[in-house]
Image 1: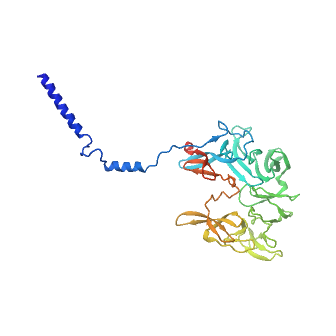
Image 2: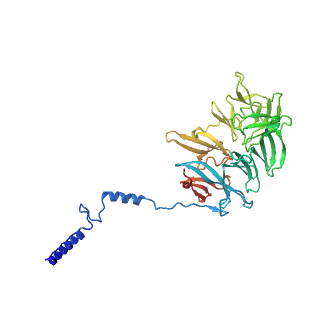
Image 3: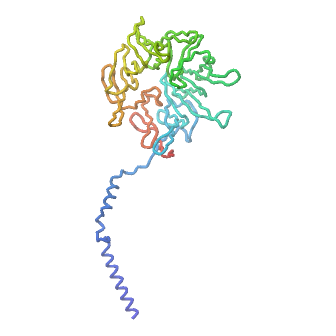
Length: 425
């Protein structure tokens, strides 16, 4: 009897297995396995729409095996700055630290500088700033300012405000706090740190503020020698004639140059823009503040008034209230269909920017103010400025793209490519 029961149980189990095998491939609703549900179709469609996965890769070539934070030699050839580190806050970028690379994209100095500025003076200079520990006080930091030739062969660093004069010289504005030498002293050094012009107290200079509130926007005139200079980076102030009254009243005539700064709010400055046209300013006759400006001929006859002053953009005169643009023959120039002039590019070509209110979009135009030709400006609107971190003739651009930072060459290929996701938060 027991044998018969076991045989009967095996028969039932085999039949059950056969039934389950026949149902394989069907779900609870009887759907065959080669048919997909609507949910599965939607998921598969999303998978098919995804791009092929590519791992994030960096391009980092080093002269040295380890990170390097000091220049070790001067045989690199021409050097170029690059962003070596960037602070990220979520999806936005904060401040960056800059290092230097060779022309082939080989890193010779990692990120140590808060800023690097290129100045197109002589063969070119880099001006760098960074914070370093104080020499004597461990809990304090100070700002170091460095001027360097493009190949890095000559560098000079000081903790004081400096400007680049050219001919491998810098002007240093040094603050001293010892004994009777308290205040600012001004002198000139070469890039071997030899004194070219002895340091003298700023009290020996008449100083005229350009009114911007910035530290490096003033004109200095030696009361005894009438030596004149500005402490604006990259701008020479070479007056044709200059004199000072008993109370530092200024009388100066200077010739215009394309890198000229706006001097219209400094009394006593006359700018010669042609053989027979001069721009002058004087105190308001009907008020006790401000200046009013005029274009006059050699005999002092007023040719045009500029009630709210003037400024320069390249070889054009810009006025305010009302806004206007004039050439040096005082002809008005109006290309307002392209927006407002932003900067001088080259020759007769200027960069304009137009704001489309409906599209909430800004478009830049390169406009020739003589021929009227205009085309959309595709480059970086700041690349033409002499205060850009990369020399404009290098063909390199500093790139911040798709969570990478680095440098691209003229063909748009990465020379240095650093993944910023590792710097996030």
